[in-house]
Image (tube, rainbow, N blue to C red; front, side):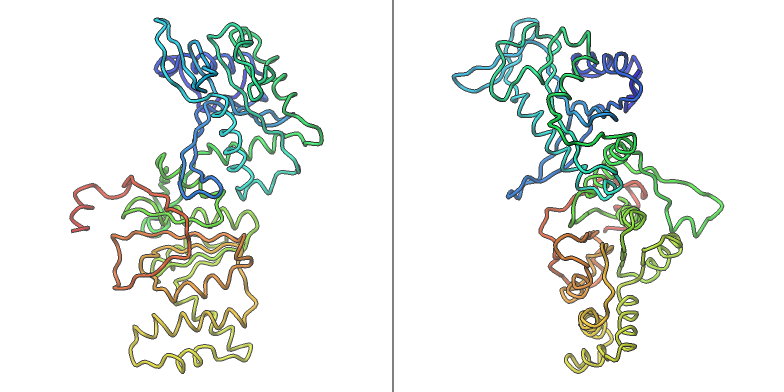
Length: 424
């Protein structure tokens, strides 16, 4: 019996809108060996190359085979018709009514490529001992008796399943994976299976740093909402990203957990925020994580200024000479950021990942010094967490991330009346 994620009861299976998907779920559960992991309805957000638009993707089923690789399966119920004259696809229900559908083979192919992007782009995948991964896709048509009429250049029998294959599913998936194995690929292994489970569907829990300090006796854990978990998994494969959301949507929790995950993967990580008390709380709550530095922005500037001074460079003096001012605000908004940029040219310290919380309060001058501290501007991680509704200071900046933001929409901390009153 295969490991099913999620584990659905008989009642839950009856409530699945697609009877074909429910039948395929049952067939996987009952016929595949225990070492196989079957993930039902895995979803993600991705961006196609050379396009600005963000797409949401979903695989009906993702099968993980320790001895071979990964298989994305698209399941379509009812009869299926392909009109060669128009290139259109239709499903046929029991009353012989036609309904236009997407090309299931293109869907399966897109799912395979999107899954590969999510897996290979995630920092956790570095722990996989192999070098090349077998990744395939297939289409299962449980109500179709004969695959012959549907065959074509991109619709090969080797990765098409029909009614008869549902009765011998283990044999069918073995045939499909044999087709996609081209030689030279490594086994996925149990390590790879666990890594992919973590990337695609691991439950995410984070300890709220502020509450743990106020009430250490109550070690309450906050389970992220489905929206937050999707964003958390999605940015795992992105080198640069903006996460936007209102108060109570968990931005700081996500920033802290993402910083911890990157540091635990062996990267050198910097997490900065505008508010010093928040930075101190985060630093106390995340103490002991090797490779992780947590500071307020200006606190970090001061640390870099001291390091530069120890190397013989008075970067703050240079900034003050270039931008003289008697205003404390001008000192914070111009002199310190300029000094940080100058220090970055002197101090050899570099980071594999930089995360910025409370980015709505950062000015244009704040960003240059941070970007200069990235080990590799092209491949290092740079994440920005922002809430436009909490802009406390009259400054606007151009965030150096071109990607469309990922939005957190569910308020899991404040009740609606408190949130509404606070925002007014």
